[in-house]
Every structure is written in C-alpha cells, then in structure tokens.
Image (cartoon, rainbow, N blue to C red; front, side, top):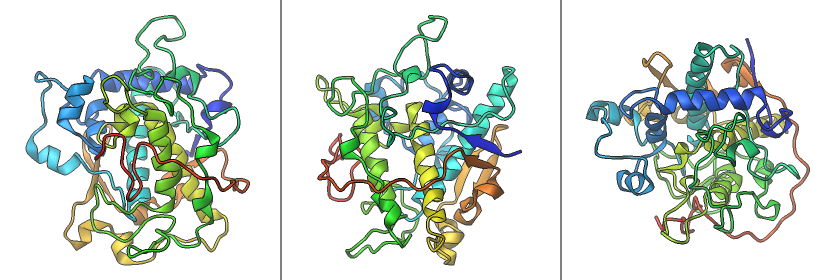
Length: 341
C-alpha cells in the first residue's frame, strides 16, 4: 500500500475525515503518560525537552512519571538542527509518529490507509491556520479538541495565527547543492556537514526558509508572560499538533527539490548515508507502534517510493518574490530566537 499525504486545505471540509481521525489519534496519544514510548509527550520530548519551559507552559508536573535515564538517552533531545541530517532525521520522525497515529486510528475503527495531512502555507487563501486547529470545540461542540492549543500567538503576538506570504519563500528550492559551506557562502539546500547535531547554528536553506520562519510566525510569543508559543521553541514545538503538518510540507519540499531538476541529488558520502552512528555518535532511534525500537539511517530516508508514501502535489512552485524578511521564532544562524536562546 502507498499512503498519500494530502494538502489539509484541499480535504473538502474543516473536519474532513483525515483531520477528524488525526484529532482522535492525537487524543489517544495524549491520554498516555510521559514515560510511555508512544505517548504524545514522549514523542515531543524526542524532538526536544526543556523541563523548566515545559513546566512554565503547563506541560510537565512533578507527578509525571519519567522514563529511565537509559530510555531518555536513547530517544530524547534527538532532533537534528543546523545539520545536513535535518531532512532525513525529520522524515523518520514523521514516519514514526504517523505509524503510531495510524495504529490508534485503526483501533478506533478508522481507515487503514490514513496518512498525515500537510499544510502548504504558500498558497493564497491557505496561509491561515487550518480551522480545525483554531477552535477548542470538536464538530459535536465538545470543548476538548486536541488540535487546539492556546500557546499559538501568530506573527503579531495577538492570537491571530497565519503565515504572511511576504515573509516566507521557497527560494531554497533553487539551490543546486545539498551540502553547504560552514565557512561562509551558501549553507546549501540541506545544510552543512556535521556529526550528531541537536542544536547546530548554521541552518541550511530549507531549514532556514520556510522551516524556521514558519515556526516563529505561528508560535509567536505571549506578550504578557514573555513565554514563547509552542512552535517558537524547538524544545516545545512538537507538543503542538500543527507541528506535524508543517513538517509534512518541509518533507514534501525535499522531494520537490530532488525532482526539479533531476541534477539535484542528496549527498553520496558514507558519513551522510550511514548517519552519525558510524562515526561513534548517536544513532537515529524512534519507537514503533508496539514500543520496540526502530533505528534508521539517512540513506533509508531518501526515496518516498521505498518508504511507501507520497504527496498529492510534487510540482515545482512558481518563482517566489525576493523580499526583505524579518526573522522570528526558530532562529537561523546569527538571529535571536523568540526565547533568546
């Protein structure tokens, strides 16, 4: 079976079946304790966990059962940023959470071919937050919609969440090289060569724009407390259900880059293909739906067909206008983040 990820804005209704089932799957994962490998919080901590910030934002308490230190060292604080591993690591991360959500959806009587939607905020009229994420209510009026979270403040920090089209672009798709230069010049489409890199400072082209910028524009910050929106900090971002739709779009753009033109190729060197574990670094390891460990390498993440999924739209976009941009949120190299970190 080939799973097809579809544009959330083209599903036909605010609560089209793929979104309704996504919400039900998220709810099932959220019901599990932090120390359960297939829980929502555990998966968010895989991307990054700042205990103090989680506590301030209300996502961690003294009563939360913690996994063992061995489990934490294997799974948590693993996301790759400022690294040529940014794209393949996040592709595996999406596949892992999608598999768990699909397993929950099937248990609830949902479709076995469910796939995670993506948010293509570059299309006019589709750059606002998908409506199912903007209301605390389910379609039946029950007021505990798991897709809604209050810690989204938007580009003006006023709770109006959208992506200003003048502040994002797809120019990275024009970069001819995947690997960039750490000593200056283009950071490349996919980033600079690194070892395991949880918080690298030189972000590749696609990681900088649109990835970083959309994180900051959506998350914003609370002007009262000064705390960031969840999407504005990598150590809280994956707690927000819209994170996964944003990363679906970034993942889609990697394939768009590879297809247009065909001369765009991923790194062919062993250090990238085999991942950081071959040099003595951490392996990329994520939980499967049954809680067992799945370890993967970048070479296994390159081709959608071998991974069993695709996207409904892989056409190259029209050329994006060059605009002067203001950095927000997830920081590119040299720019402050919403939290000043």
